[in-house]
Length: 83
Image (cartoon, rainbow, N blue to C red; front, side):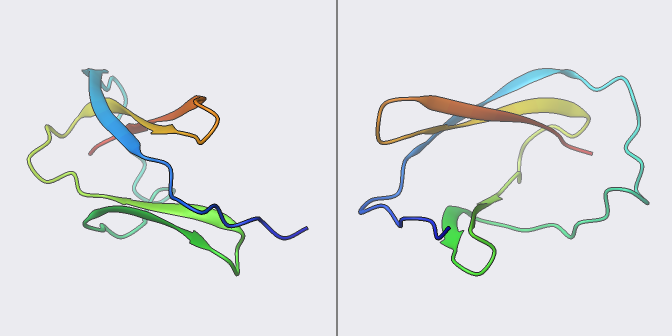
């Protein structure tokens, strides 16, 4: 089932810094290359949204929660750890 492309892209809300990470990152499992920027887009081939978040200037070794506010007002979030 294809994804309906919205007329406008939902805004990303300011990330919130959380606590220090207590475990090390397994680099073998998580080897994605770094990206830069602050945009997200719909990839019609994979039918998913992709977010490139610039972490320049943020403290490594902490958890961060990033948010998107959807068209219906719902706020969704995900927690990521920076190494």
